[in-house]
Amino acid sequence: MQVINLSEKNSILNLYMAELRDKRYQHNRLLFRNNIKRIGQLMAFELSETLDFKPKTVTTPLGTIDIPLPKDDIVVATVLRAGLPFHQGFLDVFDHADNAFVSAYRMYTNREHTEVGVHAEYMATPSVKGKTLIIADPMLATGGSMAAAIEALCKTGKPKKIHIASVIAVPEGIKTLTEVLPDDAIVWCAAIDPGMNEHKYIVPGFGDCGDLCFGEKL
Image (cartoon, rainbow, N blue to C red; front, side, top):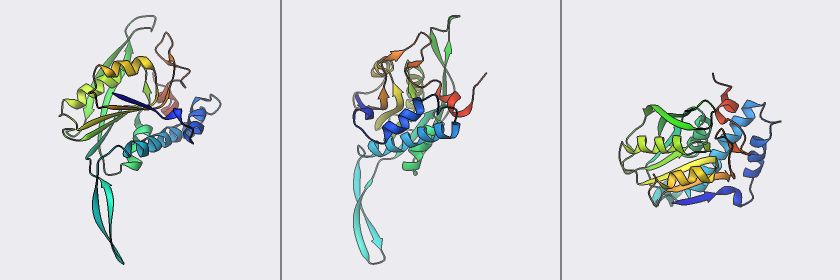
């Protein structure tokens, strides 16, 4: 499994990440969602360079030209609800892709809120058999919800390739994915943070992505 950390090189991504993390900016939900989406767009562009291409002859008003075009059939999947703006960023780039949605959320299993389980209850997806599967979820913390999403989606068929896309990941979540992903899978991160606190939130992170995008939940 390959891990690509986009924060290892300087780009405009740094600005978007700084605003996401800055609590002064987090009161502006529109800006927060837009930055999540823009990171998805940039990551999708980087990911596109790993696809398989074949030339296609395009007819212009004055002649013809051969242009290499992606030949992969792509499915962009996300984990509800926090993944929706991130998912949209990928769709802005892969606008011909099919889409999949998984409801997989974490639940604290003890009174102290230090142990986490994962509950999956809904999925809408095409078959991913033979396709390039991109699973976009902004936070890769324990990796439990992502592992559940991978398992659920792969029940519809074996993908040609799996890409995992996260805004922020931690080593524990990445390690969890090594146990469920094939060797040729790629994990994309805009940043890898040192770890989590006792409540399994990424530190320094930026807080609860779903709440910051859409408002607090009960």
